[in-house]
Length: 307
Image 1 (cartoon, helix red, strand yellow):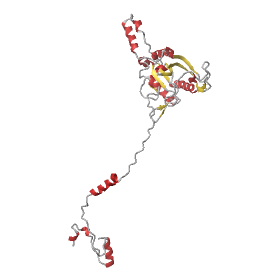
Image 2: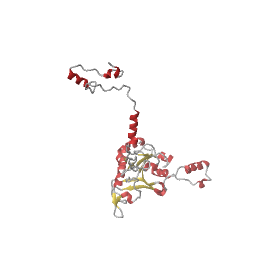
Image 3: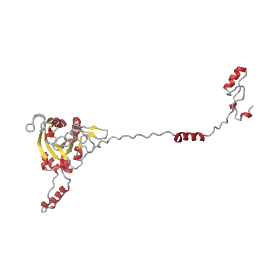
């Protein structure tokens, strides 16, 4: 029963208002509300139920270790090339659901020879799905629909399930800000009541590893991330020559504009072989035996007025 309700909630069927002209007003109002509701995904022919996913054996005679999908949806005209749906009545634990997802991964990894003799993943021999947008090869997405009639609380089951299956769904972040999901399973969860109320176009789907609710198309795809940007080549900087006009001339002007020192210039000491008022004076005293003469720089007045 929950599987059929999930299919109806995904389809969002529209009543024919032309056939309801003689019905009561409240019936017509309810039908009009269904008409105004956002469109669903696919048609009734887009859904298959109880589809075996053999990890061993064949399609017609599946072996042990495989899974069985409650619903398989294929509606490429609505942006859903392939989607596997598992309906849980909240009777199974997180460990039991994780074991079922491990069987999905085992089936996705299985390769067989196709009709042309080439080896391909087994699921690609039955369904056609485009390649990854960024060169990766993600597995088909799986949608978990929780119908709250059992004793399990999905708000507690989902966080535990995320930790148990992190190796199955976690992508690798790239420098451009996007993620690669090579051989990973995009896993999304939603409540059946929310699915009935908002439909697949409502932001009520929780993708494992992402923050915040999304629509179904956003949750099962990789469109919410930024695509990688091409590397920009650096342009070589022009070489600037330090010409006299740009560097030397400016320096020369600066030197010419420099203000003279406030201290008065002191001329060289006269004769007696002194080329410096201090050092030469000491050398003269050693030769003659006279005491060294004081420096003329201690005078504040011009040299010619000092005695």
